[in-house]
Image (cartoon, rainbow, N blue to C red; front, side):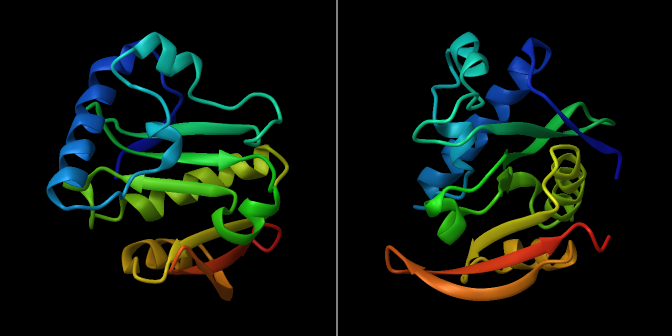
Length: 175
């Protein structure tokens, strides 16, 4: 698996649009929303605005974050995205966690989420985050597996908008 996390740049504008177009079509045809909020909060068709506003830089309603994209180096193809929140507010502590991630629909089931989370955990250490909270809907078996494969220990389950959310902690000090 020849992949790495990258920061988005103009070099990857076409790859981003291709990936997000695929994701949007999938969500429409499957009546679902399986995408990380961070990469869909702004219109990706206006790439300059999208790039300038991809990350939260100051405290406000949202906490500061870093957004990375998983790049397949052999195919020069974006496979997914991961959002690292630098700290937790009350909502994130209960429901969202430090990391939100997703793999584009055509690349799921190939182990990329597990690898992407592993690479993101290295970034968390660089940010000084040594105990990482990750959450997933109880119905999302693939997400649960990728969290557990990275050392996630289930703390509990909480109810959010009629969905059961599982909360997992990953202790990076033990690694």
